[in-house]
Amino acid sequence: MLLVCAAAAQVELPGTNGMSTHTTGGVGGGVGITTANGKAESKVSYTTHIVLADSRQWTSTDGKTLQAKMIAFEDIVVETPKGAAQPPVPAPPATLTVIRGGKIRLVSTQKPFELALSRLSQDDRDFVERIRAVHAKKPASPAP
Image 1 (cartoon, rainbow, N blue to C red):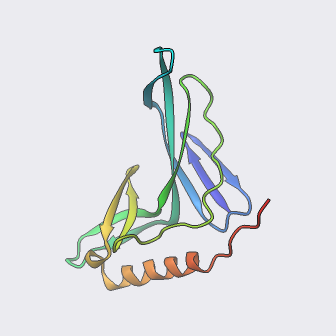
Image 2 (cartoon, rainbow, N blue to C red):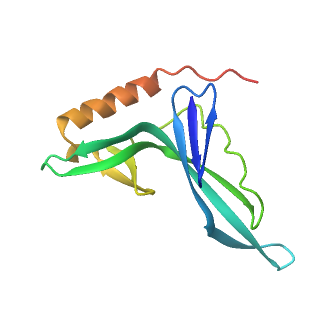
């Protein structure tokens, strides 16, 4: 099951193997793009983070704690013209990156950041390894 959190709406999409997504963007997320004819076209960018684990308390090696969700390194970004309705969230990629360069990616208060595995408690590193193993075993999606 895929849980999509966008603005104030929540949508569940079937058949997505327990992953969920968290979308940020909207009114304040606009970017200006200049078209070939030189006119500025205002766009809004929606970024969806793919949540690999629900919010939990993470503990560092020095005992500090943080409440955050674990997210994949891949994001889904969709742009629409300013004023248009928020677009549907496309399906996540078939392969997700859980660990990259010895780091994981977390999101807390809607801000994603990377954290070195070496800074996490052994219990948290074991948790991350279980999540990585689950995503490593997922079969490739069948071709349409």
